[in-house]
Image 1: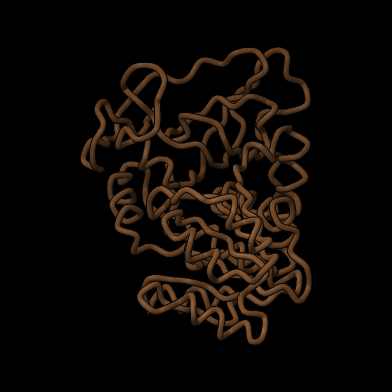
Image 2: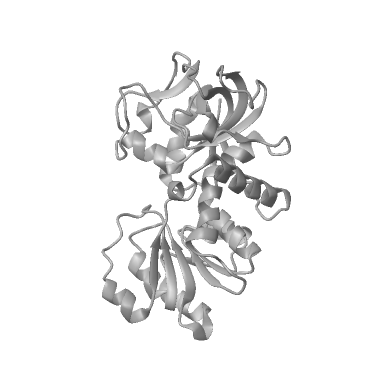
Length: 322
């Protein structure tokens, strides 16, 4: 089979398209021929060597995708050859064939495309737990979404708006501002502006918003400054660098809450994966979620896809198509 591989850490140039052996099919697994594969920043971090990779080269990136079942292990009877399957948190996805444990195989309805499934599951599940588990968004809430033009940011905005919240987005360019507005943000501010004061003015007499979803990390103290007394900051990413240390005395004096979030502490079973996926698919059907700005690259051109994502000039999701 063909796969996108690398044998040493480094920039996008270390990636190359090569013929490698098909994965073995262990008990409790299925073999899926991928139709669309999601690209995420975690892939970049692993390619650079920032994240640990087990085993020896050649390494294969990718943890999210969708495709058609080609083979099933002898002890699997509820999944058949030809079934449509989506998956997240399954390694070695940057390949034509991926071995998937059955406890991570998500049934894909026929009215949801492979591209939409690969474009929504990882970031959609992240946004889903953030607005339901980390902070239960309510009608009338005023929220800030960092990186509002990104994949998670757009879905966060759309899910929050569907719950009746008001959303102010933060972006780094005029082009991304337009993307965030299209996703439903009530207002968008630039990171180049005095956005903390802009948020406070936008919140009127509340002296800050109810909650801030911060995926940047280095902005954490500014996020607290933009949050009202008894407000909440939800920290779930470090795209802009490590966060500062937080003084518990500040939390006590302001009655503010800091909560962290990691998807895999919330998605802990196949049933939970399926339930969250079905809610995302329903939101797509109802038009609550719109992910029209998918950027697709052939898998063989994975290096170019990495360059685009790493440039931070992309908006929405980037997919690799075998």
